[in-house]
Length: 127
Image 1 (tube, rainbow, N blue to C red):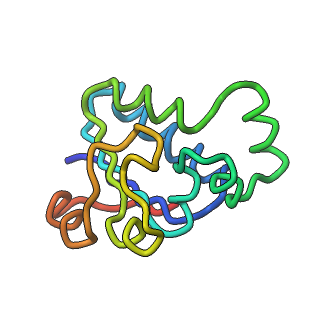
Image 2: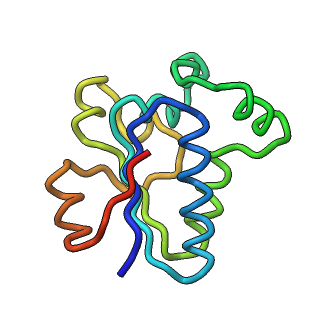
């Protein structure tokens, strides 16, 4: 059984924690499915202005200053081979975005039903 991570929050600390969990689980050979939705989607946009919508507390700011970026961690997680990352199709539609507007960490976009079908029977951890 794999790990499912649901990223909803526009908080850098949560995005960093989820990316780190995906990397560690993937490096141990676990299958990981990550679904990015709601306010978390802004943190994956290519535009720095849009990405600035997410919140960074004092610790997350210091972690990022050390060069540990959640986007890079998620890229590394995908390189393990067992980590798949999906963008929420509804948020893409509401914002008028496509996958091309986002950082290249996504395998595809899915609706909620597609993600539930993809991860049937697995527990989901929400960030």
